[in-house]
Length: 291
Image (tube, rainbow, N blue to C red; front, top):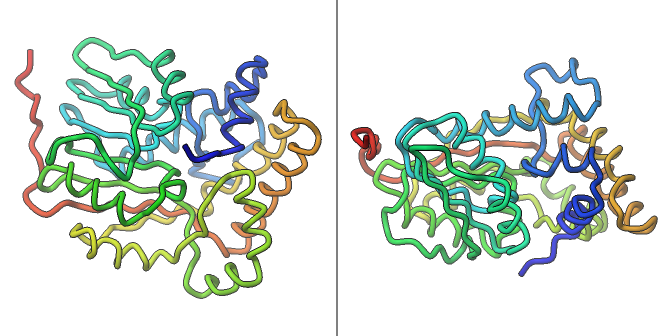
């Protein structure tokens, strides 16, 4: 299992009943989205709303609608699955994560409402334990950089998608004009970030066109929301002091977060949402006639 110190910190905060951390990351473990970033006020209340807005944003990019079969790979604590379950009908939802602690919390917190089904499984996103053509949509929200191989995941997603199905991936990327600078000048900083967040080195967004061809997926549509996620950083920096990980751990977490913030503000890293299509006709609502 990949070690992710930031998840250790969040889980420790949950055990210590750190209310602000639980409200911020106890369900959704991803950045927030603000239509108007200048309106962000830096509060936990505001961030919770922005986190929910991010969930809706990526679900819209994935084309979530009633009657679909959806896989959320790297599902964390099940927040995206919970949001889909609350807003859509006749859904078959699966959350997958390699960390049994995250899946245990998801199972405890998320229950299917009538007409929907939910399953949470402990498995590797690069070795999906599902039959070919099992899903209408596969999602990977801010997690593909933790996987052993982006290409292996895309190939597995392509395998389990039905013809015309959608794969949505959101992550930080490094524009081609800044990639060399980020990797060379920023390598020590990237190692600091990896030490807390466990992220792989960001890839240029153009790499996803190559990956799409290799995985036999359609070229992705791209949504850049870099500006809309920037208000996340001040909130996370405030929350770091509430992680029960000791002063040294807090310093490491704060430094890693500040580095990501500076790189994002300078445009060295961009936050983008990629939506791919499996070849073939778009799926119909397979369960639309279900009573």
